[in-house]
Length: 86
Length: 79
Image (cartoon, rainbow over all chains, first blue to last red; front, side):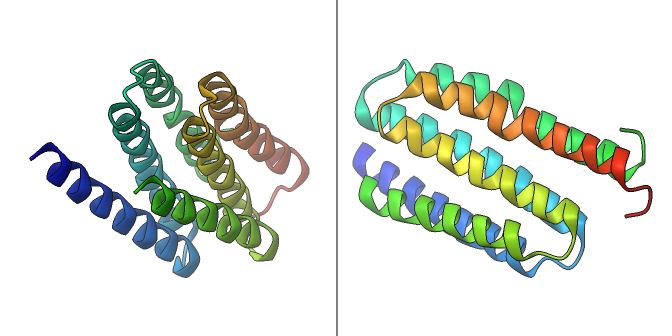
């Protein structure tokens, strides 16, 4: 049961990465690329949490926590740049 | 299972590196360089180096993107 759920989660994460990178390549405007980066950040946090369970080393969840606290800074910097505030 | 994930992540690093060089928009190039750093950080976690991953996440993805955009704002007034 747990293995089935982990496999489904891995497939969904792989599809999210592929479609996020496609949006990054095909993106017409800068805002499309920023949204793709935000999606891939959330997906990366999911990968780290999934791997923490898969490897059985729960110290990796701290990395996911730090990443979740810091990951909005890049999107915030790009948003301030586009609004000419940086 | 993890090998498939590693292949996808390394392909993502490669694609975002190529995009960071080839894109015409400078903001798009900076964002793509941040994505390469993001995927490198996840790769460090899978390679069992969580402290390196934490440093890469804070400096490479957040701080260097902000510094690049600040330099871009200071050097070019129109973009």
